[in-house]
Length: 262
Image (cartoon, rainbow, N blue to C red; front, top):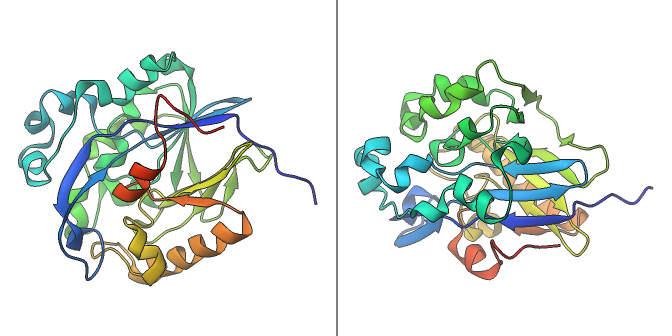
């Protein structure tokens, strides 16, 4: 069996935060926590890859103008230097340098910067665009259609219910992990020194992995539980560290930009 290739480097871009009750994130949990909302930049020999794009940059200076009462309700903390465009510039890149953008799903805290990359190749999980524009009423508050509207007419590849090896070398593999939304995606990133699985919102807190527990607002609980079990299996088979995007302990443990993993 051929040895998989590797990407060169990965940065977790510095993150705005929400302060919410854990019951929003994990069934049966309680107590307040402050969660990050990072995006990840990955350097591959064939181009730069961005996994998620965070919040709308304008919300750093006018949160209520962008998100209305939701900004205060979720305890948003967002500095101008934490916008995805500002961080890419700080790392020495132009927006046009980003060749591939992978949306873990279409909730508003992951899609706010999609419009910044009009010439990129986009990847979205099967069914997620449709669900984002016409969500079930119970989850409608997690979507902001203005953020995904820029994808209309763009170069969008819908990942059709299977995993997808982006470059064909095993270094960056899109994992189909539906449940939180119909097309929820995770990402396996192989680096020279370490492998990571970036979860998107397949899980929100570390306890979800150990107890196999869903988020109360998942679109499909059965699929969500299956995807959580799958992450645990993939962690072992790929010898990978699972990085839960919204987990504050993971954010505190793993280094983030300007530092990178190689």
